[in-house]
Image 1 (cartoon, rainbow, N blue to C red):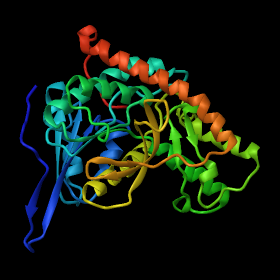
Image 2 (cartoon, one colour):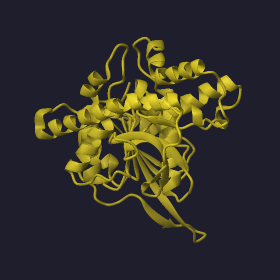
Image 3 (cartoon, one colour):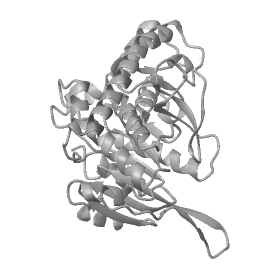
Length: 349
């Protein structure tokens, strides 16, 4: 692979003598159902000097299309595995939406068999071409993909727990929407942390911490929690085998990346939930609210006092996360030994 060693991100002196930082964001899997709307939304983010779009399919058309949007900065397309390293070279943020979507009836381990190589190959490319980048995965199953990527980064000597993320923002977005609708208020007024993981019962919205306070009986809390946990399946079933959540995921992904960019730019007090290497519990990877900074994670927000229902749910999800982490690490080690030679999958369709 071609290795571009010069860093894209730099500072430039504006005409009025103010130093402005320019940023490069790379989207891997930019041609798919998530990648295309995500890339469009990212064109609205201020401060991006270069938006690099990578996929297996030819990206010239999509790059040309997005380059006509009346925003500052350039859009560059990269195609195929040989151009993966050039795509991420010098990037400040690499967001990964490549891989196979979840289909009706598909188990997460089957999805991992299809998508695990995405994590290893992108982590390898970032290690070689942009080891200081913030690396954020949309690719599912996030509970396994992030440990896989971490192990690949460790193998290349570039793992920094502050810089690796699994994007779980969609769980927060859904929680805010469902609660807002229930309370007849704008979702923007709702603040709620979602902890754990990014699949099924590992998704734990802390409804006891919702602001404004969500007042309802225990049965309603159980029902709402279950809907948030199974919202992805709701979309998969509604699409009847034609894909998974794409547009809402693109919205959530752009929201998270925008927060990363604002933090890189020096904005203080930014808190987002994400699935990361963590010591908050006995699970090695865990989603929780994080304070973001210029180098990624600035601090881990301590877990609040949980309700009895939330404590019980947390105890049930932790063994699953530990198992997922073990499976992700095992996948990476096997792949890195050369036992799999499959190419980088195309974007999520």
